[in-house]
Structures are given as structure tokens and as C-alpha cells.
Length: 253
Image (cartoon, rainbow, N blue to C red; front, top):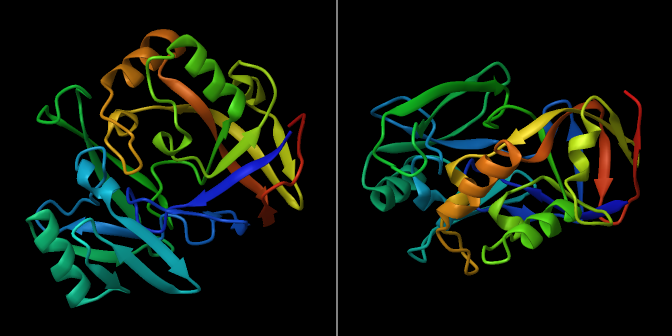
């Protein structure tokens, strides 16, 4: 097995960037979910679980310099009043782009019914230090994507729909990573412990750039056939650098 792809998402719920290599710490990938869009009215961090338009924007980090490309064609740089104004005008309500604090925690909302965006929202808090939903690293295998495509070839199972940090190239057509729960993965100098399955939500049904369509049946199928899960979530046992093409070894926890 080897690393087939690496991604980080500098602004929560926006499109991110593919990386050849990335630094990893206990908080996850450097720069991943480092920023969030704060709704001035509710005090929550806006997520594409509730505001799908966020997926139409792209966030990039060059060193510490943040660039946001909006679907309007506008480019916003860094943080501050001009960026807040651009995001507020685009989303149609007052928002502020903020950076995660080491001890801060984001509060998020999603519709209780993934088929009805106007259903009563469910609210929760994420971990400290980033705007990730729960765990710092999200892993997905090519075998799982092939398995889903074999089960439902009528649907789009593009890796971008599921937004992993690491795509691992594996043989076969089964959800092999579900057998890694409680085990550890070595990727170069980095060691990860697989903690739990990645429970999927309305995000997987959203429209995304590159021709990814609104497909409620993606989540309906995962709910019915796979207990809502696809991919796994991990914590960082030992940090370092992960690079594309590196071998991945699985061993006992």
C-alpha cells in the first residue's frame, strides 16, 4: 500500500489543495482547517453541512499567506475587514473569517434530516485547536471507492466528494480500512492510530466543482449498506512529514 494523494483544507468546508508532502503534528496536517467562517448572528462556524455554497470556494496556503478564490471570480487575501466584506456579500449575511486558537473550539450545525436543509439543526463542538469536525486525520482507500462504484455504478464516487486528508492506494474492492480500527499505520516517520469509522453526512451529497452533482443516493446507500461509514478517522501518535508515494504499513496498536 502507498499514499496515492494528500489534501489539506485551509478554510473549513471550502475546497482545499493537493500536496506532494505535508507536515503532520498532533493537531493534524499543517494548515488543515486552520480558518473558519464565523456566522456573526449565530456564533457558529459555517459548514457546508448547512451552507453548501462554501464548497464552491477554494482556499490555498502559501507559507502563512491565505488566498480564497470565490465563485464570483473575486480573490480575497488573508484575513481582516476586506475579506469579511467579500465573504459577507457572497453569502448574503455578516460573517468573519477567523483563525483557530490553540485552546479554542468551533461550534457547528447541520440539518437533522440530510434530505431537508431546512430541518431542525443539530449542533456540536469540535476539537480544540482547529476547525475539524472531530479527528485530526481522515483516511480513505482506493479499494473502498472501487467497492462503492461496484455496488452503485450509477453514482459518482469521486475522491473529492469525501474530502480525505490521505488517499491510500490498496488492492481489491472492499472497505479494507474498516479492519484497521485500533491498529496503527506507519507512513514514513509518521505514525497514526485508527480510532473509528468516518460517519458520513449531508456533505457527501453536495454539488462540488469539477462536475460533482447533488446526489442524495450517495448517503442513502452508505446509510443502508454501510452503517453510514466510509473511510476512517485517526489520531497522530508520532508527527513528521508525509509524502505522496510513500509506503503505508499497518501493524497492531
